[in-house]
Image (tube, rainbow, N blue to C red; front, top):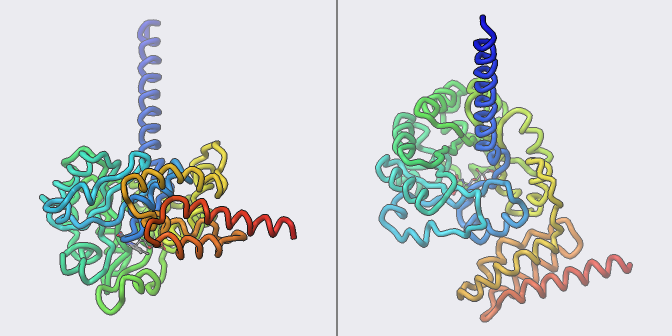
Length: 358
Ligand SMILES: Cc1cc2nc3c(=O)[nH]c(=O)nc-3n(C[C@H](O)[C@H](O)[C@H](O)COP(=O)(O)O)c2cc1C
């Protein structure tokens, strides 16, 4: 081969390699935020809660509460979809089973600037079943696939959150086939609550506690679908546990532990995402929250809508009870504003100074 041809070949190989590395990097960046997420939780992960969580972690992906597709298609979109710019990366979770409606939801999510739209195939409540969405859709994999296909017509990341099974449909083969159908229509990320759901006889709360956790099935899915971004959810209490799961799956979603003990999120950027920025102290988190509290007050939003989400901030610390009690007893009083938060913090400081002096 002449010299010019050899040089050309080397450059071509290098170019290909660079492109491959770039693609890989884009892919890694794209899935990077899935390494840790806070679960969608009705009545809990509203926009105020998400702003609070975001102050502790820049990287963790945050999910909205589930919004029924009908509310987006026919209802007051601003009420259901508006969010604060600081919340990114943020995903909208929807519940529905009508492909056309879900496509409309995906378009609305894109218009509002969400980073992702997620389809709920995990909620077992009676109300949700009556609407033919949530966990009962595990019995209709083809319909779920059509829903995903419709949503994927919109230029937004589409993901599915599901269980490992429902009722007697609880074999690994059934789960594998369900996920296979999602993969076949181009789903790249599947979040799996590692418990099955009983569609009758258990309340949603019991369905989060009674069926046993089967992490092994989620790990197996990752083995069988290495190309999929598999996110494990259910019963993960802290970042230590999350880090262990991350050896076997791509991401971990934490629900109740993040809500009840939110300060676990403060170390997430360093420990899970390798971000070198210093971890904020709890006091710094409160200080960072104050401008948002002031903003809410200036908009006439009662401060209790924010303080209900921050009650667990000092969990495990001296002053935790005082903080919780002061906020609970004072934030709902008429005229209460951001000063309730500062006053609660003063009391925590006094309790901690008492300990230091003792
Ligand atoms: C109060 C509450 C509300 C929830 N609402 C939703 C919801 O809207 N959508 C959803 O997919 N899961 C919902 N879940 C389930 C969680 O997303 C998560 O799958 C479940 O709590 C298991 O994770 P955990 O053990 O880390 O809490 C809810 C859970 C709780 C505690």
